[in-house]
Length: 243
Ligand code: PTJ
Image (cartoon, rainbow, N blue to C red; front, side, top):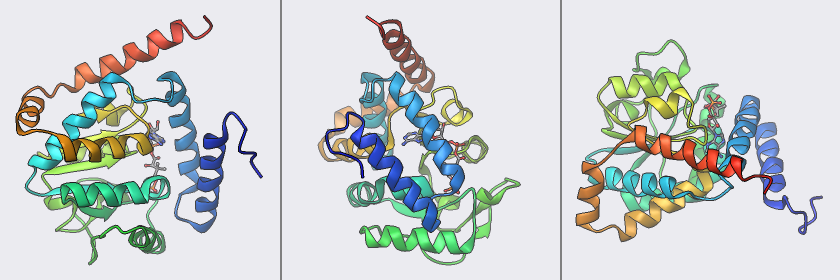
């Protein structure tokens, strides 16, 4: 039992939730270590949405709203952490949602799809095929899923698929607290923010963005600048950590 007045209450409750989800199979056991890496980077940005992350989130909203076929690709960690938030974003930007897993089993895919549906997400159904140029199981997707999307939001992605999707000419938006990861560096746009803060910020931006702001953001996408800013914000915070 985690006491409500524990200074790390939210973090501990999240860990407990992810552990429970790992026991049921929604989260891969490897997903727990991935979460730990994310937590470490979240410390470095001060567990808040930084100015550069907010700019990336508003740009992501502009990209999703201007897409003809937007898609949100969901894995185990994303479903466990942010199913409700994904449902809200889907309603706002009319994106399709598809479950794509690295540690893929048919049972896990079905379990995560049901979990998302119970949170109000409209999840793509139908047979997946090995359609992406990858040697691992992230190659599996549906023809009307990631394969045909023009803009793909990929929270907590692995670098291989991110590179493959960019190589296929897609606009790829990553959410990754690690600005040094291959995913972060190869995506069209990377949001260096914690998933449960990032998704609601994108949804909010989808609701209040003007046409003028949308056009401005689309004209000025610069992932290298956003990653440099994220690293600068971390460095600044670290250099004052013991003040
Ligand atoms: O459910 P599956 O089978 O598809 O597997 C999912 C995981 C997450 C295990 C798989 O995609 C994986 O191994 O991912 P990586 O390569 O460890 O990358 C995950 C990235 O997400 C890391 O760079 C973390 O820093 C980052 N991350 C972890 N938790 C969060 C996060 N970024 C934002 N918000 C988080 N909560």
